[in-house]
Image: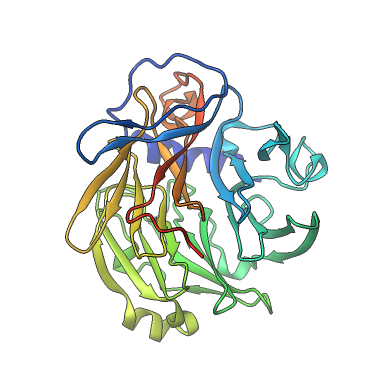
Length: 357
C-alpha cells in the first residue's frame, strides 16, 4: 500500500500551504448550519455533514443525492469508504468486506466519482486499480488495473475524471511521492472498454509547479459535456485546459493544450454545466471561481477550519466539498497533532444556479 509514500507526499504539500484560516474550533455533533452572508458576494459555505471521527477526503454524489466519501490513508482509517446518512446512518461502502479492516479489498482510496449511470468509480492507489460499483443494484461492475508500465516509482494516483464520451478515465499523476526525485507529472489515460493505458504529456510545462520545491499536476476536472479537461499544478496559479478529444495521441494532446485562466494553490477542481470552474483555495480557506481574467472568492469555509479538499458538482444546484484539516495532523505538522473535529462536508450554491439536466 505504500502508506509512507502517501504520508510523505501530503506532509510536504501541506507544510508549504499553511492556511491563515486557522483558529481554535470547538467540537460539535453532526449538524446542518445555514448559509451566512459575509459580504455582498462572499458567503460562508453551508455545512451538510459534520463528524468528530469520519474525516472525509474526497466525495461523490449520485443523481438521486446519495453521498459517498473516502477517508484519506493519512489517518489510517479502519473504514476506507462511507456512504453518509444512509437511512440515518453512516455505513461502510459498499460493505465491510471491501471497506473495513486490515484485510479489506480497498487499501488506499482517495479518488472517487460517479458516472451518468450512478456507478461509483473508486481509485485505489494501494492496489493500483479502479473498482467500479453499481449503486443501483449494489453489485460489482468491474475492476480496471493500472498497468505498472504507466506508473512511476514516485507516482501519486489521487485525482481523476471520467470521460464517458470517449470511454476514458484520465488520472492526474502528480508524482514526487518519494520526495527525492524531480517531478515527472503526467496524465495516465485508460480506455474503459479495453483497459489499454498510456502515460501522456509527461513533464509538460503546464503541469509543473510555479513554486520552487512545490508540487505538480494535481487538481483535474472535466465539463459535463465531456468537451474540455481542466487542470493545473497544486502549487500553481495558472489553469490550463485541453480538448477531451485530444487524448488520442501525445502529438495531438501537446498541440492543443492552452492556458485558460487564473487560480489559487488548489487541491480540488470542478466545472459546472455553464462552464464555471471552481477550485479549492488551500491557503486562504475558501472556494474560488476561476476564469480567463481573474480568480475570485466565492465562499469561505467556516472559521477555525482548514484545508478545503475535494469538490463535486451535484445535480441539485450546489457545489459540494470536503474540509478535512490535513495540515493539522501530527504527520504533517512537525509531529504536533492539532486536529480538532468536526470534519466537514460543505456546499455552496453554483454560480448562475441552473440545475444540471
